[in-house]
Figure 1 (cartoon, one colour):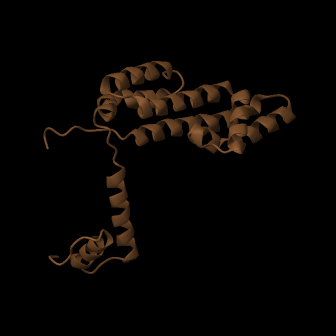
Figure 2 (tube, one colour; figure 1 turned 30 degrees about the vertical axis):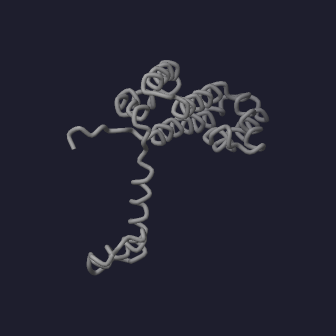
Length: 183
């Protein structure tokens, strides 16, 4: 398929950013040991340890308890607050950009803004910029294909191995209610 366009899945881009944010959260927990006051140290550690989902979930999907945790994290760690805001901005770019030009412009601005906070993610997105930008043109993800692959693996595991390929093929066809009379 020589004319096929490679499109980077927006969810993999978001996953990349979320992983880096979580790594920084873990670093903040470890670097918290430099505070002199043990009570303050324990309070900050408690806030940061319970903040994973409050930082990584989309802000609009947070529970009231997670919103309160997020506010505490923003108060305790300005770096995590900035990174969380940038993560939400990236999600908003993918959600609201109406065409390729707007998407790539806003993504370029985001990359410039996040250059110091998301070093690894920015470098990876830079390497895959054309593929990431193609999302704004084609608006496609690999979710359906990943779902099919997951279902096939599940069928294979539940069969504990098949003695012949025809049995595996029949189970796959039945799973998707396909016509298996020709199989």
